[in-house]
Image (cartoon, rainbow, N blue to C red; front, side, top):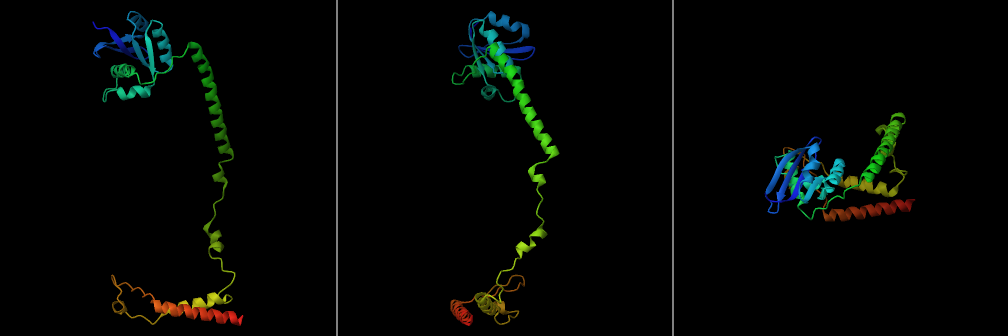
Length: 241
């Protein structure tokens, strides 16, 4: 039998899956192990590379297997997932994916933690979780008693903004000479002679579906005479003041 060089170990609660390949890449061993058989199985193998997924129990089994002379590679699950075959999500496929990922030297492995380090983290993790839960509970209590800021704000009613929308100018048209002259002159120019029903065809505009034709714009000569008339009226009004 060919010597095993790389093994992928899928960790579980009771039944572990082993997938081992040789130097040529062919599968040498593929079997299931009970929890009590894991240490005995790796104790009878020649030193090789053993890959596992990094998790809480992964560090424990990494220490147990490393004590039998094997090289451990703990890989994050995100590095193993691309090697899982599509449509095959089971323990055997996961063990094969771990074995394939462990043979890739460019994938960064997670260092194995000691038992003391894990004990410290197990003590500190509940404390951090309690601190986060206390902050969330205090925030919920404040929202229930006081309410968020956007709930305390009274929305502005559209009726209360009526005086802002229709606020008159400080100077009315009667008091403002320039506005008076320009308004009268522009109103007289835009009014023009009365238009008849067929006037749209006379001035070249198009009528669609019997719609009222658009008024024709004043020509450049009319605009010049209009500006001259407005300026004369403004000058007269300022002279009277």
